[in-house]
Length: 158
Picture 1 (cartoon, one colour):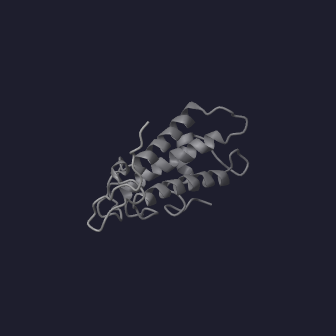
Picture 2 (cartoon, rainbow, N blue to C red; picture 1 turned 120 degrees about the vertical axis):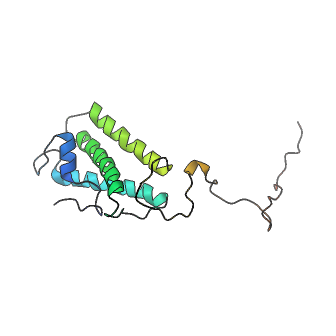
Picture 3 (tube, one colour; picture 1 turned 135 degrees about the vertical axis):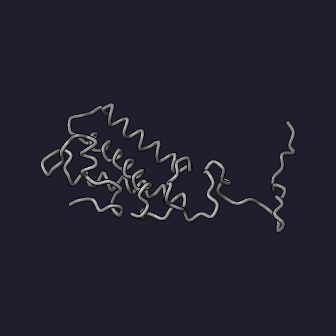
């Protein structure tokens, strides 16, 4: 029951085992099935961010460099979840915290276009950083694009 790359995740169970140094099976906590779910959940979050900034997901197997970046990201997110799912452990370990923070920071960098996928083009003609985009909504403009005067003024006095 291996993870299908890239449709179910960008890493597989063996990648997480290599990072954590722990074996997962039907009798461990978390189980191998749960580990696969962690991988898929983290990959879905990655794809959600990539979709939002204009990439077609899942990223193609032909994009080896980008897949390597996403594999590392997916592996660390899933490893953090696996470490935090151990019964009886109520405090996040230092390494689980480091993996989780690295995963979260990478998602933010991808969402703000501060990290690129080197061998993948996106569907946007002119990508811009989220910080540089116009705010959502519409402006009250006339047919030539000039802003109309506001409907309510600030002409009252105290």
